[in-house]
Length: 119
Image 1 (cartoon, rainbow, N blue to C red):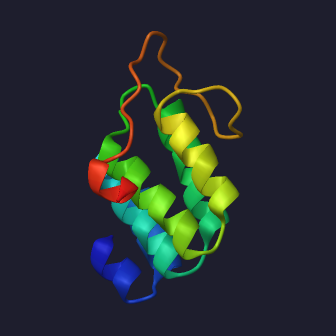
Image 2: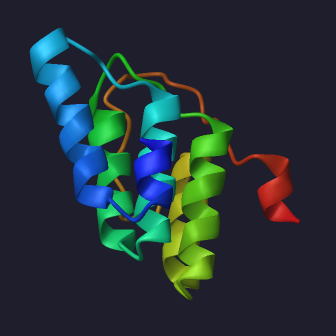
């Protein structure tokens, strides 16, 4: 996934993940989602990266982490979308007032953002 993203083959990266999911009962984890978000950013598809967040938090078997949110927030900033970056940070800390999906699990703890992203 990471290699395909860097090669600007975003649709192929998504297709590969979907094929592995359906044919081999593969469940993407946070690392796969993080690589897909990074691939979306590299290919200037911020809306697709943000929708991946919503897909991931809807999956009760997959947990977000601070690295995932850092990649997503930095991507928003790289694409000159500071208000969307604020939404990502608010979602990472589970603060009210953001437009992203809420985790499907009740009582999940906020993961925050990797500290290096805040520098």
